[in-house]
Amino acid sequence: KEELELSLSQYPSSKARFYLDRVRKALIEQEAREVTPPKLYLDEKAEEIWTSDDPVLVSGHAEDEEYVASLSVKGVPVFLEGAQQKVAFKQALELSQGRHEVPVIARNLMGKAASRRVVVHVDREGPVITVEKVEHPQRPMEGEISLSGSVYDEAGVFQVVVNGSALRTGTGVEVPFTQRLPGNTKDLEIMARDRLGNETSASTAVPPTASSHSPGNVARTARAAASSWAT
Image (cartoon, rainbow, N blue to C red; front, side):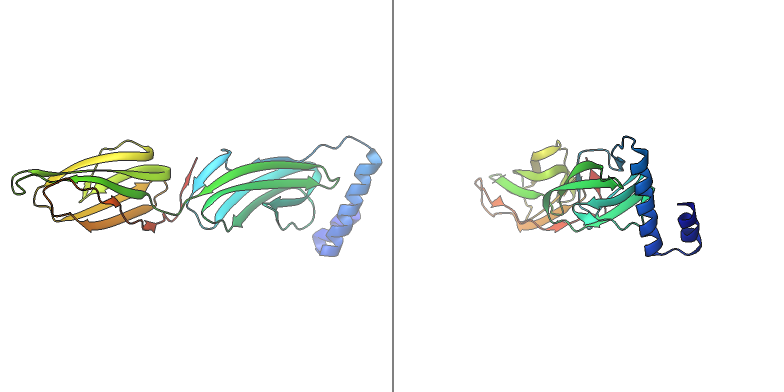
């Protein structure tokens, strides 16, 4: 074993690493001691996360006195230059919009395995804005237009802005909003942002009627944040 380790330090090669791992395994078998699975740690402590990242990075490290021989993230092997007692990893995953279960598995030279799992919710779309009612005053130059609606986003609504004014709304998956506008307002601009930074911006003309109006769902266009994680 010592000669192989010396050879590897002076002339590193895949062949030398392969035989060194075989020698290490044989020595462990000769000692006939109990072998436990590796210790596996993920940098992300929460079991479920929300992110708009693309790609999504999963990182952590594995430790084992009996040497970590292989490691995989969502079935994708992590490259190792031979078995090691401590392995740090960072794997980039191409994940589509939606929910993904990401298993991480580490095995030592004796085949003992440890596993961890993280659920990744990928959200790169902006919130859905729905204008439910627009009420006009009987005298447009004197009264105010009353606007009401709601914003929906699975990651959680963070902010709603109507014609440049940020509204005081609650937080949650679906958030109702109301706003009063000058009676002569012709155009309506609504921006909604979720807690990951994805935005929806919608513009429409205010319906020219003296009675109440229910326009329904407003267009959904998203701009994803450059990098965002939430648990």
